[in-house]
Image: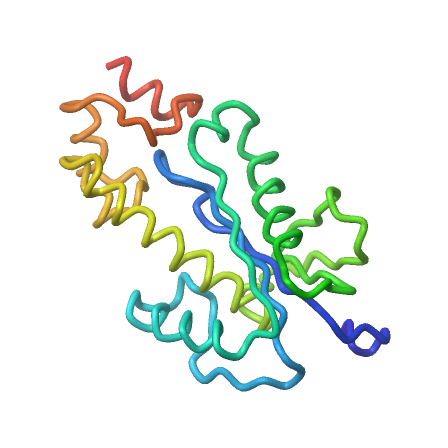
Length: 194
């Protein structure tokens, strides 16, 4: 699509971690070679953890450039989720070693970038570079949550990755919030007020 408009360096951009009660929001930007084949590449949510890790390695080897940017929970609390998502995506684009000419972004536009761009609805299931960004961001965030599980034991971050599962809610009531919980979130505040 963007190639048809004459652009040759196109970055796919996606973010993960918008819904959890804890942990960072993470975005990735990926520039893939034209017509690259990455068997099994799909929306990161439709892949197993092992499939994502395998694809993460393949994407890193095949990509012309990739970049990942995290926005931690404390910053999400300060600037809000919409701005955190945009900051993570802009940071990922700015971190690319190759300057893209065009951005393909999953579902949202990125006003912080002056680059020509297209918000692709369900791009994480239909566009290779967005799918690749989805995988890199998800693997990066999941790895961070494993480290947080070691730093803050008892919450189960290794299992639920910060999402509002029953076991996570139970741990929150028992232990109180950790430093990586998003204290500005109404559902978290409501849970802790009980």
